[in-house]
Image (cartoon, rainbow, N blue to C red; front, side, top):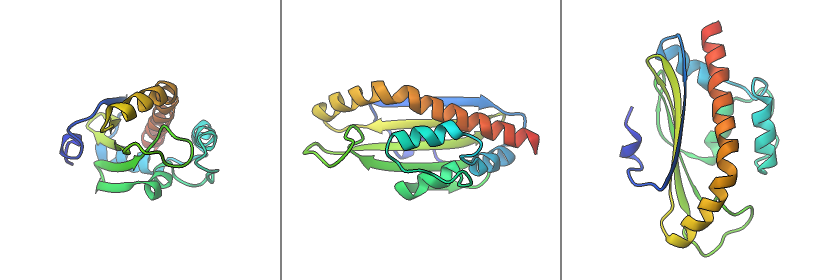
Length: 159
């Protein structure tokens, strides 16, 4: 798989999370793709609180993300890279500011599962607004990512 630098080399905000797994990358990637909201009910609640709709407990977490995003790269056994564009700091509607671009990577590596998010915000006004949003959202985003990665680890190592 390509590095995130191939898709978003310039960014102002980022976060990365990783868990160690005792299985090969192919098995870890498969487990990550199969994690359902039933395995991570708190994630379902946090997405609902953000206004992203009630998800079925049987739906996989990554499948729920794909309709809102554009798939940049999907390599079974290695990972998935998605991109989203928008004014994430706004709950509703659009303002005059240019949108931000986010790239989200879910990757199976030898001995680990990782996710990284990078966000490029093109202008200073939007950067200030996004920074305020990020201070509030980032801890919840971290919880979501770690819960999903840990559920994938449990699933992969139990198989």
